[in-house]
Image (tube, rainbow, N blue to C red; front, top):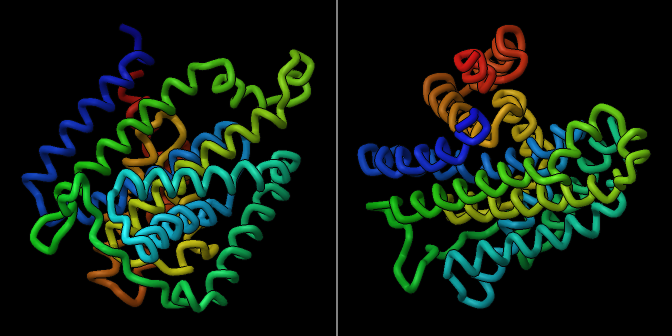
Length: 310
């Protein structure tokens, strides 16, 4: 078995490990579920980064997925988590297909800034919408699966377990996607779009597909985050939220589909402890971590695994 073939085994082993750790450390279930929700968004960002694109607007789909699941639960009473996640994926996917028609034509700073502008438009719309709670947002009902609650004050393990399974399936799907002809186009598009077009592939169509996939993953991540916290608000679409995803992507590296989840957990861990022990200067701790990563691990945390293999 070659090194590339070990990734599915690594994902399955990580899933089993996380499920076991969740039982041993129940106090970390909430943090772990948050990290997985944001890790799904960063997984989509990893796909764009491998294509040479940096999106500062993934908060758009992160927020849209959360609001799609939240409004369905709020106004129809549907609390089944699978229905809510599918609704979030569908809403963010449709939006990404429509907006991707425009964004697929841009590259570099234009792509980044346009994606950011679209995210801020959603933020502005939500702030002005009183029916959705305006700046305060609204609370979500406890999610269920087959009529059984997935989260309570005593235990969040069922929701944590579901998040782990969803993350494992998404990581496996992305791993096999990168091995398809369309997935292999990512580094080629990043290196030389003209040659890709010369070989007969449509760069714009490929970018559109990748942007849509990234939007769907962000929508699912946003829905998971909203269901975990039990509350959603327009801040999920604000530019600082999208900046966090880019921060985590740089922290993680793009060497593996498992990297976004590792980076997201470390990010949440550093922020939690920094805020607990230094609530007035926790951003300084995050900035220091980022600086150290850039200086000593410019390829991200996952480069440590690659060095170990080498």
